[in-house]
Image 1: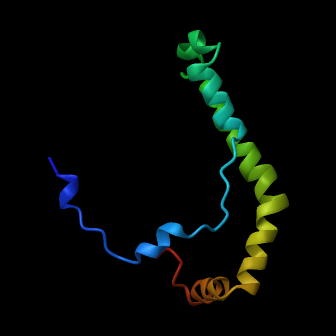
Image 2 (image 1 turned 90 degrees about the vertical axis):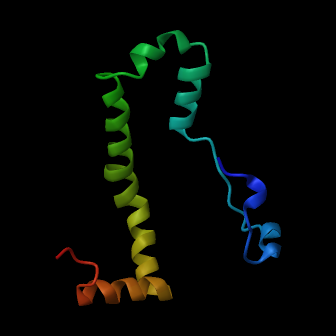
Length: 103
């Protein structure tokens, strides 16, 4: 087994103090998981975490992310990123050259 004292950290040590202001919020999935595993409904854990009821969570995730969130919010942000950022323009260029395509 490895000894943590043998780990050599390389890079810029000052980066540990950098804060980009990211926030992690409690989302619906996390709240449901907390209630299912640790809350008052934990006695239902066996039923709630096995198919077919488990498929409802998959359907919800698909519907929310692919049907609602992507077309009405994220797609606009992605398209703006492609046009306005250097990385987005490079990504577009690679796509036009076929670099991102499946061969």
